[in-house]
Image (cartoon, rainbow, N blue to C red; front, side, top):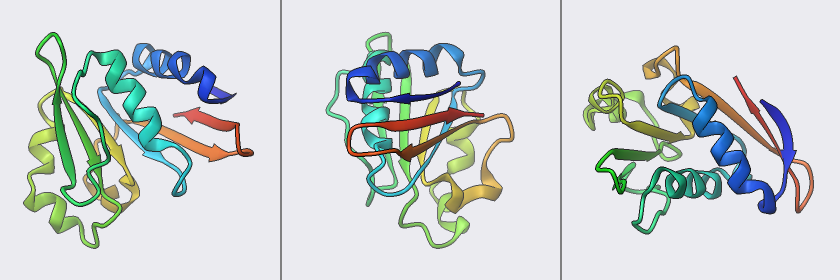
Length: 135
C-alpha cells in the first residue's frame, strides 16, 4: 500500500492497515509531527479500544484492552538511548504474545524487532496531506 491521504481519509487508511497487515506488530516510521500517534489512535479505535489513547513517550508502553478482550500495546521508543532499556522492560515478551504491538520510533530498537513486522513509513507532503507506505 502506498498512497497520499488527509485527516478525512484516516479512518479508511487505518482500516486498510488492519485488514492488510500480515503481522500484528506494526512499526511506524516518520519525523516528529508526521501523525504517527494520530494514525495509531484511529487504528486502536477500529480495533475496539475504548480507553483514551495517548503516546507513551515517558512510560514507553501503554496497554489498552479492546471490546473483545484483546490487548493492544502502544510503544514509543523516542527517548530510548540503548536497546538494553527495551530488553529490561520485557519487549521480547510483548512481541512474542500475538497481541497488537504498535511501535513508534522502532529505529531505536532495530535489532530487537521481528523480521516479519509490518513497516509503515509516513511522510509530510504539506499541511494537509501525508504519504503512507507499507512494507
